[in-house]
Image (cartoon, rainbow, N blue to C red; front, side, top):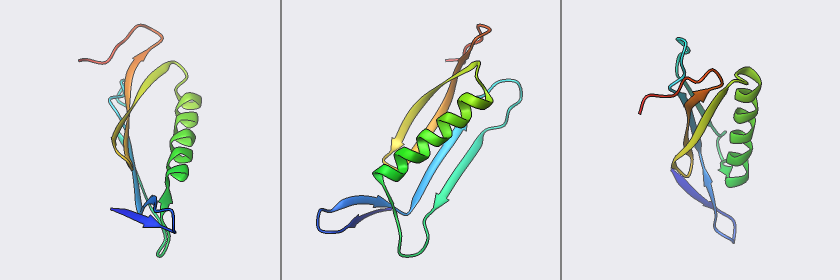
Length: 92
């Protein structure tokens, strides 16, 4: 749900949803859902920071894998496994 905060009508969201999908080797899909506290909301900067934090963790945990970031909405995103260094690619 989209909210507007302050005089400048900045967009803010109560929930951020991020999924990590399509990984090989039996790695299960991950669904991350962050809900803000009552009376608070996530602005676009907070959403960007959350995406960067997750991208950094993916690079550290799976350095040989490449992911595409797919925006499903202003507060919903998927990291979709694309390929790995050993030549494997996602089925299209």
